Image (tube, rainbow, N blue to C red):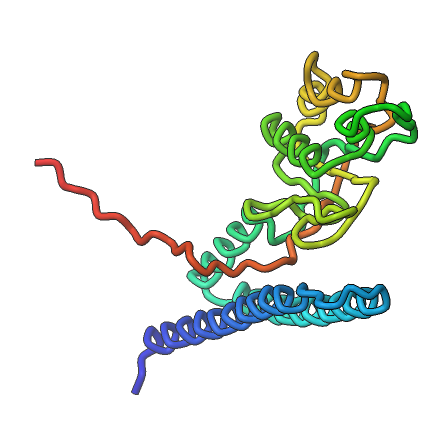
Length: 259
């Protein structure tokens, strides 16, 4: 006959087991999404109707897979809420998991900050302007990366671009006429929301020789950037793949005893 202590321990083990199973399902769905996107991204036809059909199919597949991941995330949330109502030890585990998710950008965040809008200039370069000068009238992936870097250096704690949360593995790159962030296609304008100290972040961008001034080098292209302070900003959670294929966590290191 089991004692109350054994029963309590068995219940805790069962709860942790259920949580591990759901996490495994979520990671498996994320990997499936990543592999499917790689397969679907190979467009073999050069005919315009074929390109349109292939693009529509890829977008439909991505929507279905994102809905599947959202379903697993909802199930995980329910299990977490159930665990949060359990024993003190389970409650500590639940709180640690929520903290880890917040730090990783997997939960929404809210707070004061600034909103920076980047857009292609309405002005047009001179007809005889060289190609590199013409590129200065367009927002590129490097402009977004530089802006994010400056905001982080100025104390930004959470950033999103057009609703895409920026985390450690977020990729920002040009892909033809569009820019991809977290493998999501977007184009000008780019609305960058940053939670952090509004005064410090705005001052960092407007400092002499800083980010804003780069739009004034050849001529006044100030219409390409707009900065607003916000008392409250809410950035969404990251919803892309969290699967790591090569990086593994390092186990606890043994410390040498001092003789």
